[in-house]
Every structure is written in structure tokens, then in C-alpha cells.
Length: 579
Image 1 (cartoon, one colour):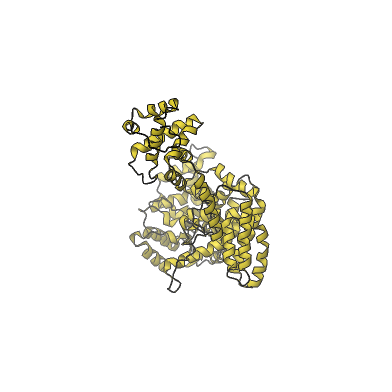
Image 2: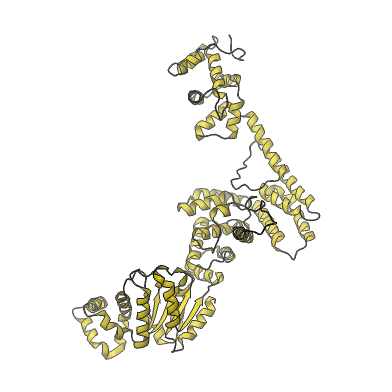
């Protein structure tokens, strides 16, 4: 039952004297200890107010449990009158008032805790917490024996706070607890804290100016573990510290913070992993390849549930923000500068963020709001073509895909894509930042536009650009491979002769000589580029009209295994060769 109802029931059970042993069970972190503290502080029963509390965390014997309880009880023993006169006299021997309790503990240790415990604990209320975290040497049967003895022989009442999902399977503990529930516990209450209640407690521990947005996402994720919710709030506070975010930007960054933090801290019951969440929006993630005629597998059913959760959170795709978030959660190293750049970019694009948030809300309505007719949805979508340039290409693609399935929506969907392309072309972009690590789908028109720009870039790429990129990046991509494979001896010769930056010339020559030394007639990545480079160098070395450059080329090769190759006759037809 919920926190409120459980509290009411626990108060009622404590008011019934025949309930000697009450168990308060539930999952770890759902507020059982918090609930008990509220009940204790608000009780009108003096025994409940003075209840003795002990955590079994790390305790390895019942003697240690009794000692902990007596340590808790000692500050109040004076109220018990004559039976403790001898003990009080012991406290006062050579002890200052400020430290008498500590000296008393030493004296008690010399007496015998086993003899004192029945007197100190008689007729009291004892709360035992963290039972599942006890030392393995302390057996459950010993704990049960202690509770049974003191409840029946010494009039003590017990409240057992049990994280039953954390009980060990060693030594048949589950079987022992089943027996305990049958023979020792008078009444048991199981706490099932709601996500709303968990957040209300957590926000009192770790406050946030983004409480409303965080709460909404926590409830969507059904986070009931208070400790984990506190961690989620603190992650959000650390990432968003110093920002004043408007609702549209909060809607973009807070749901992923909550979801990915919950994944990291294992707060989701049977939730997705980082890999699945990061792939939000790509075709494989959407399950397009599934055979809908077959019964879905258990794994496919789980993934369907994860997709629905992410749709509810409004997470339709991931970008640099989620990448930075995951790196932070996994490493613990907060790259404030990278997060700052991404969030500042969102803030600077306020209108774009509002438009994108509007698009996400529209897509959410398309998926969830069965009360809205398709005609109304198509009508609502008419605002997007004019603002299409503010969308990213992936959201524009999603809108077109959704509208194409509605009567009269296809034309509006195409208008959105065309509007996006028109705005993109107006930027006269010569490069495409199509970083798409999560393989989000792109409309064919947009994909073709990107391909055309990339082809143009490749067509204009030079061997110098490619080589310098390889040097600086310690690697290469398709652009560099294409430039190198396409280059002729004439291209290499022109590059060497025309290179004005002498530092680049030095780096270029050194890298190309290394490439030739390491390759055969044909390199698997760069084709015959190393061989064409050698042809160009022979042409220059044999050019009597460029003696300084020819001498430089010869000096570069004379101490290498390529010296004999340079000495071969130069190829005919080089544009710069003079014979």
C-alpha cells in the first residue's frame, strides 16, 4: 500500500497491544525508515516515542545487537527510578557529567550485557532495521530467537524493518523467513511507495529549481527508490547548475537526465540499457525489421515497453547532449565545458527549441491521443512547413513519416521536408555535419542533398588536404581515401611545386615517403597513390629548370630504400616535366 495508507495502518497496529511483532516490509530505498521516524515523532504513546532503534548492518552476534540497544537506552535510564540506582552510582565514580555515559558503557561491558539486557529492554518498543545487511556470522535463526524470547518473556514489542528484496539465498534464509512470518510475526504491512511520494521525500533532501520537470520525468519512469531519486536530482542540479532554462529547453534536457541517471543507478525495474536508449529513433530501435505475423518474443515485448517509456518522456532521438551525459555517468568525470556548449546552443536557438518541442508534442499526440481525429492532426501540422528550417533533419523526417499515413497529410509532410531543404540550401553550406552515430532515419530527399554536398567536397579535395588530415588525425575516412585514390602523378607534382606553407611541405613529403616505404604497388586504402607520388618526385628530380626543388627531392630520398626508385627515368607526359 502507499506511504500514506501504510503510515495510518502502522499507527493503528501499534495502538493494539496484542501485536507484539510487527513487520514493515518492502523494497530497498522506498522510505520504510523514513516512515517509522514520522510515526515515532508523531506518536502520543510514550513507549513508541522512546522506541530503541538498532541497525543490524555489520553486526555479527546477538551480544552486539543487545549492546547497541543498551547504548541507545542509557540516556533515559534515570527515569526508571530505584532499579537503576546502583547503575547510576557506577556512572558517577570519577566521571564528569559530560562524559558519564561513555564511562558507563565501559562499566557495563565489565558487568555482563546478557544480564543487563532483560532489565533495560523490558516492556520497550524495539525497532530492528537493515536485517538483510547483517554480518553473515549472525544467522537469521539467532535474530528470530532473540525476538521470540524478548517479546514473550520480557514484554518487549518489535517493529522489523525488512528489505525483503535484498534477503540472501544463503543458508535457506528465505525458508527461515517464511517460518518466521508464520510463527513469530503478528502483523505484516508491505510498503509500496508511489513515485509521487518518493519524489516528495527526495526533493526535501535535495532541492532543485527544476523540481516540477524532474518530478514529471521521475513519475513517468516509476522511480520509487528515494535514494536513487535523490541521486537523480543531484545529477540534474550538477549538469544544469548556473542555467535558467525555459520550459522548451527543460523538456529537451531533463527527461534524458532522469532516464539515463535511472539506468545508471539501476532505478528502473527491468529497464533498458544505455545502448538501447541512445539508439532512440533509428530504424532498428523502432523494430521496423520485425516480422509482425509472428508472436513477439519476450525480448521484443520488453523493448516495446522501453519504447513506450521513451515516447512518454518525449525522447525521440539522441545527440551530443546524451553522449556527454553517458560519458559523465560512466566515468564520474564532469566535462562542464562540453555540456555548457550543448546547453548554450539550445538556449541560443530558443525559437528552434520551441519549434522542435512543438514537433515532439505533436508526434506524441499522433502516437497517444486516440481522441483526436486525423483530420485535426493534419490541420495542426500546417504550422510546421513555414518553420521547417528550425527543425533538425531527423525531426523533419519523423513528421513527414507520421503525416504520410494520414489522409491529406502527405502533402504537408513533403512541404515540411521541402521547407527544411530550402532553409538548408539558403545557408550555402559546403560541408555536411551529418554525424549520425545512432542511425536515425533521414528522408530520401535530405539524404540525397547531403550525398551531393559530400560528393562535391570529395571532388574538390586535394592530396595535400588528405595527407595533412591523415597526419593530424592519425587516421582517415572516405574523403581522404577518395582524394588519394583519384590523384594522378600530375596532381602530386602540382601539389609539391605549389605548396606555399613550407611546414606543410615538410610534413607532406615525410608522410608520403613513409607511405611509399610501407606499401607495395597498390595500397588497400589509397590504391596507387604512393606509386603516383614517386612518379611525381622522379619528374621533379629530373627537371633541370627547377634545380633547387630537384635537389631537395634528391636529398630527401638519398638515405632511404627508395633512392634507386627515384633514379629511374622519369615518366613521359608529366605536366611539369621538362624532359
